[in-house]
Length: 573
Image (tube, rainbow, N blue to C red; front, side):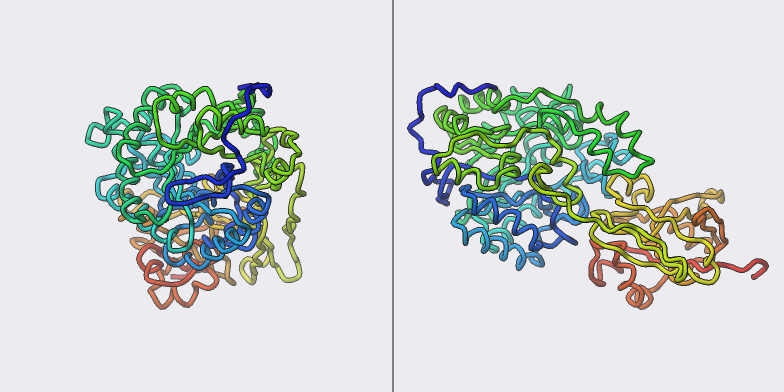
């Protein structure tokens, strides 16, 4: 959408203070939530704080800590922060650093829903739908889990308020759980959570109400709401305007940020411009690159970029509502900001332009009104695996290279984000068999190589475990992540909080004799299921495979089964 720079100058000063619910922010420009890829093991890091401190010091009124999950099954990627009291100290450090610049701090809270299937989790969704990222179907969420998730939002918002955040932004867009319930394409339920738009909006309204009840008037409560999903049969303007009216009538929100697209089905509808297919493919191992280059354009179609491309849609919301609205989408020029405010939008949110120039707002305020240097090439998108940045402004961080030390038979295996290296010894039985190094693994590779059993930050190597089916008596094969320790292998099965364990764990309990295929060699093994003491003893070495369980506690006992696989000599009993 082209903005006419000669349009009348608005009376609303973009750099003047503004009320956002109970909060006063220093100006009307918000740093939009853009996934930073800088948390580690679910914790706030110095790098994450500095990412936002630079933007805050650069003049924005408020910066938004991007997607933080309200529960473990709501994580959309490994290492995402799950907002619980345990992470409050790190969040407090974050808000202290932002407030020191004079800016306000917001935190985006969400449940990934079907998007979580790509991490190996259940992928909770309103209905059973196919998740191409995971190559399997999602799991319909039941009443008990819906009640629990609503409560998780409220508890996370309380933690955020206690940590000093000025606002929480509830993620009701991009194909995540609440957005999936709003979508007629993804929500095929016939109960009180599906059918009419009033029923499909029930979860969004329940979450907003629970959060408002939890935080009261201490902080502002915002929602990021899809105007359109960008897929045939998805949410469209007629129904999304109705949802916004319902939320406004409830009186639970202080503002709505208007967005579109789906991380689950069509991410480029949000970004517009060229799709960085080749750059995304380059982040994958070589054997996956051709496939992504071939199929990537179907998942990530390109859309022409226009300044303020969501404005035509957003005007329909402005006409229908009286509450404050935040305009998002390709804002590059001060004239665009001024025109949006003149049309009645309360705030504007910017993402890529501030990646390119963190001090853009300060530059504008000082009288340099040249447009942002961002060219919307979208090559920042693949950098989420190594720390989100503008590739034109910041060089890629150095990455350690995997190597094999033949003398010690050790292998260095790169972490998913290229930040950690773990050495593994292969002695005696496997001294001649060097484990395969799988460098720079990402979520897709996790799924293809390790099935649904890996959400790790780093892995040592992989094996294929052949068990005897407990029911069928037939051989069953499962690719798994493993830790090699001398002659033995350790493998871990997780139920991710659900009742059932992976089938291969039951097979091993029923029939401990199995086989592993490791670096091209098949070896018979005998499995031992470790008890609580055994797991506690070995956990310091295994935690590298399972950083979401970063300490040994009751949850490890409840959710994880750890097996030691010992080679069986030929002819032994």
